[in-house]
Length: 371
Length: 72
Length: 164
Image (cartoon, rainbow over all chains, first blue to last red; front, side, top):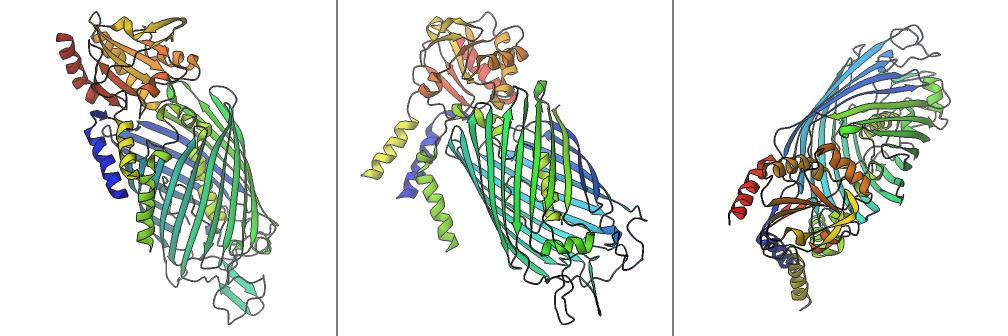
């Protein structure tokens, strides 16, 4: 009976002599620079570039390029101020090792106002890692654009080639991700979204450089070669008054390595003038450890899996940041952000990076304009 | 089972579609503003996506509108 | 029975005011450029009018405005008039945008603070345009922005309405 109703509704739309024109695609270009610095000696400077060109009123081609200039990253073979590198015996302070990652993305978008389809591919290459991925997404607008239902999928085929030519048990790392999302306008001042993500990874899932050094035990990190994860997120944005708003989100994550996490964030935004918006963002993250991580120094020869990466253990983190949006004449936009990130104390952070907790600052600065 | 849930949800959404038309097109002024976006700065969302993926063990929950980044 | 009623209601909603064949919704609203003075649809009796519902915050409205400026210039001196109606919360935002694309003030706009016209026309998208013939009857409805691809057909329709 409900199907009949739906069919009648659709038929009646067809009878209306309404010429429906839509789509919001624009020719746009942007230049940006992102940075990341932390107390584990990692510094990344990332110039970004994006170009979007309308091929017709409903088709848009986009190309993006991100270059990450990394210092003191994975190619340091995991050494730090107090640990010598297991292979070359060079310590961190001596080497000024650099790695540059190039990551171009190309995508094609179709938008007729009711249907938004995007598909594209992503490629990244650096000294010791190559990533290739394809992605597609579909968003359908319903109920006079009050409801949006979306599905997206991506598949990546990555490959390790460690700098010191370690023979890995396998050198590939494939990841599948599928997202389902729904967005609903509740009132003219409030909207909410729900997202479910499914993630499946297989291959070499640890780092080729991490190792465990205990009395009578020296082993490279070894993780299970499969990982299935699920994430559920709820988000909302609410207008407090004509100049102020708040957006908030909560995500629950769980996987078959027994890692469970809660992520919550809240952000206040204010229009200080007609052209300038800023605010304050707070994020809290907490996770459990995996089912194979053990306290530092307690692994045994008979253990199947070894983890020395702090991410496999329990910890929390906090982020506090400020966003800036400056709207210029002709629709150009200058955006910037600065965020401070800090984890809780973790024995694996101490063990590997010789820091009590990881602290970092990351920034973005982008100029976007129509041409 | 999943098939029935999906079909049921679709029928539910279309059958009570007039209840879900809660904001008329001419009432959407606030949603056009930057401060009313769920992710007001796209570049920050991408940058923090990389940071959190590399610094934490969780992923997912981003909007379906973003493409996969393939970062590790 | 309930299902038949619901279906009829849906049909009734869709076939409410603001459809082809209906009379254009009358109004008497403040002039956006001079809020103390009013503009009435009655002033355009016997003329061909394109009533456009817009707002400065609507992307599609911003894109089609330069096309409307050129369209009105092309029919200068004729009986065709474009009549804009903005629902911006702050009229100064609408004025600022119009002045940036229409320095010569070729286009006229009213200020509809109470959103009377979108409600009366049961507008389902922004922008919406209604082509009204000399007898005051709606002959075409456009939902979404009118771009270069569609303006040709619109011009032909306007010429045929003027020629009647």
